[in-house]
Image (cartoon, rainbow, N blue to C red; front, side):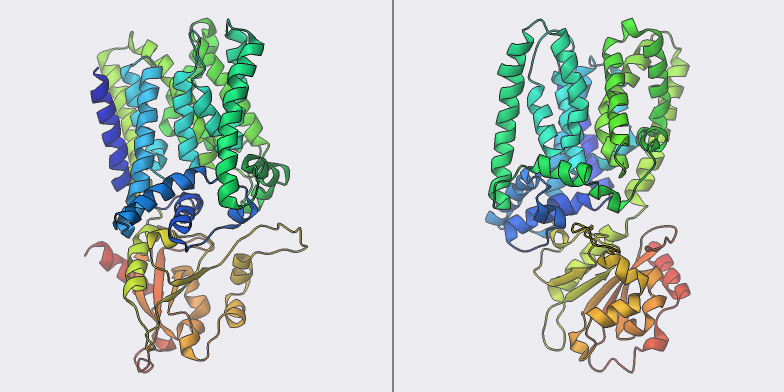
Length: 519
């Protein structure tokens, strides 16, 4: 198969995901990349506590900031391009890593099929997440790894990977040991002239970039490990049992591809001498899962870098099976895998949690056009779980915005509660303590919240009228809801038209969502 055609096909799929995936996944997609880049380039925005404490590297945001700066110099820094181009950049890198996967696996048709169909990779492959970048770099590095013969080119992307996400070293430590054991070159020479030199060059450049932007000498990989691993700060944002990655995390990321992966494990165990690469990859996967399982805070995206390793095991086994399978069986298997990936990819990319993405254009219009009776610009208050939406990167207007923060207990205070917890514990008490209500013009001009909160703060919302109700999810949860609502402060003269008795009922809200869906 023509390699240019293959890359074109892969690139088309990844670029398509940029325009198809229109839902919210995790805050880090924006708050650890786009928001940081926007602050660096345009001088206003918000940096979360991770950037204040220095546990994040500026390497990835600086790349996006360079793109933003170019747009600004060309006077093309529209919010549409600020949102779109970083995703296109990441999608292009993902496409190249997919192409390298195809080459690494021997340019087999099953390799092309299995790298294109996984629902999780379609869902995250164009998102501006450090985990997506890590997975792409891991795939590229694996494709240059000296499985047969000699070579050290893989050390460059692997070293970058480890600097950006220190937990990636869990993957590369066993693979590096495997390389040293099988290499015909001197181990000491390899370590001193390749591993050490490349590692120091990458670390030196990364430290220089971080030192410049953080404003003082800093080694962000160490800070990352200190806070997230040694001090276990991550557990503040949730914890799972030790076996979660084995029973839920990795099987969910693989989805229906778990079936060929299990088949690949069985074949590799039975005929290990024929599956040398798969055997080493399975050892690496297992060790990585064991190490990651010792950390309380777990997320699906934390094992996304294992996806290329798992898919190689699938390709290796399924390709050999296909030689003895009937044509009907091959087509049926491909159809089942395709359907099993398309359905979750479609649902999660276009339906589930789409509210925050649909919300931002409406807030952008408010930020651009709204003026109150004193000709003051919008002042937006987000009464939502922290980081429930993108921020300045999707509005690109220097207006006042405030959200409920959720910094962890960095000072080890007793009975610590973050701002979001204090608010949800007693919403009306928090509002009376933090938001001035007299004169009315001192109130935020707009309030953004989930519909589950509306009835709880009805007295406060008596000063507002419902402006937008945006469909978000199918079910309400403790702090989120089925819809995101935008309220606008009443202007002078609107008191007799809108009052607390006319706050929309739940039935009215659901009716508006229904009408918006079909109009």
